[in-house]
Image 1 (tube, rainbow, N blue to C red):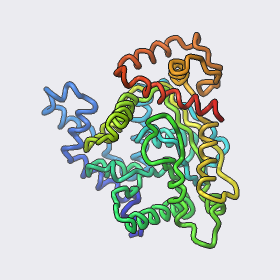
Image 2 (image 1 turned 120 degrees about the vertical axis):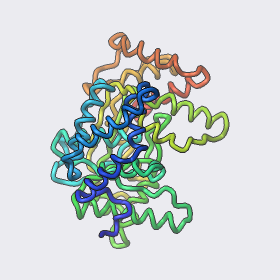
Image 3 (image 1 turned 60 degrees about the vertical axis):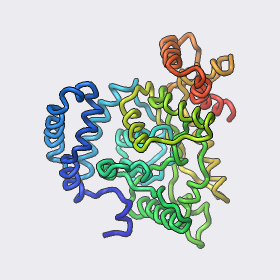
Image 4 (image 1 turned 120 degrees about the horizontal axis):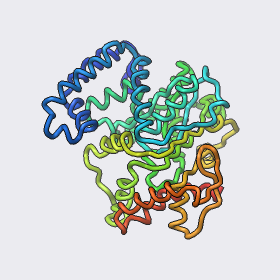
Length: 382
């Protein structure tokens, strides 16, 4: 037993019993059938369900711990990247040490894929994968909670409502993050704000830094505490966002109606779309470990933002959107290779973006374009 049992990921001893349990969960089997075989499920669901269960049992029969499970997940991720992207690239890991633990704080575009791509980059270079912060608002079904905690996710309590309860949960989370890094030498991933940046503006919320610092005590300064957490800002960029139309509609409805009410399992649908949808090129850029005598949380947030904007890799889609909004081509570099952007060199990408834009209702297109153009505006304003 540990004081973090209520929020920590599952350990090796819990993996096999949890797998045996969720393989029998009809909701999980139904979800896999709907995700992988949406058309066949309607007619041949009675055949698909036992087949899916049998395949899961066979594939996971020898999995008896977290690392073997992540090897299975890695194989699936490799297929997903091949099928739904033009490749994953990354940079900056040469500045870090594989045997050291870090707190990776990244911009937030996709619920599941952001930490997954960070872990893929780390795994590829011999680093340990990350423990992933995930809000309990996403754990709307028991099998989802089990799946997340099997894959090194820990729970962020966002359902607390009373001020004292919120503070207690935040201190507990802060203590767990510090314990993971300094006592267990385990990497952590957390988003730099609650909720995805639906408008393409990557801005760190200082409240996240305040939460992280709740465990520092009175003896240490904020700067000392931040330095010992080994914080690394991370900039994740997608050429195409599988959820761009859904994000655009949400922002449009907020503007028109003053709010937006999500369906009960809408976030789960977003996770599925983020995994299965077309992403184009994806780049994960790791910044430098934060070092300095930070006086307040705003200073820490500002440094994270500076590094994310500096490291962020633009894509042709960002430039085509900028041109649509501003009427001129931006003088920027694109891609992991840092090519000078020239529209004539990216004809297929331009036509692809035009086709994507054409699927968006006309009244929502300016919001859609801003989502892709804002990273260019951020880059030019540095």
